[in-house]
Length: 50
Image (cartoon, rainbow, N blue to C red):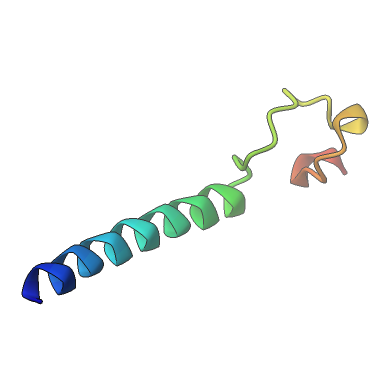
């Protein structure tokens, strides 16, 4: 029983860290869009495409 709780807690921490990292990258403009600055044609809705 305690093993299940420990494994669940570790998984929750890992998922939370991944989500935090994704949000931090998105806010800094380094999200999942890899258009190399040519955002007019990639359709990623990049923040630097304005």
